[in-house]
Amino acid sequence: MILIIGGAEQGKLQYAQLTYPDRTVYQCELATPAIDLDAGIINSLHLAVLAMMRADIDPLAYFTEELPRLQDKVIICDDISSGVVPIDKEMRLWRDQLGHLLGLLSTQAEQVIRLFVGIPSRIK
Image (cartoon, rainbow, N blue to C red):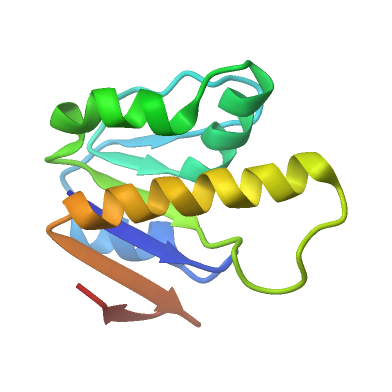
């Protein structure tokens, strides 16, 4: 697994598509917690996590169970852990849940890449 993280609009998807051009992209959406685990690149994981929480699905439990299917994937996720802690309870829980999930995925990933202003830095 390759985990690509960074702030919003930092070029994560473009980097993944240039680096892994033969992989199909699945775009996660807030409207559905479903994820196509057959896609080679899973983009915007942070949106799927919030959709799962709203559907009463535990994201950490779901992804722990699906870890074997994620081993050959490129997973792209916005890092929402920086900045001011949200006042809104749902947003705080989302931030916490996503942080726990990224911790799990990073331990399983072969590579973790952070993009900042379009520049990739390999952190694992």
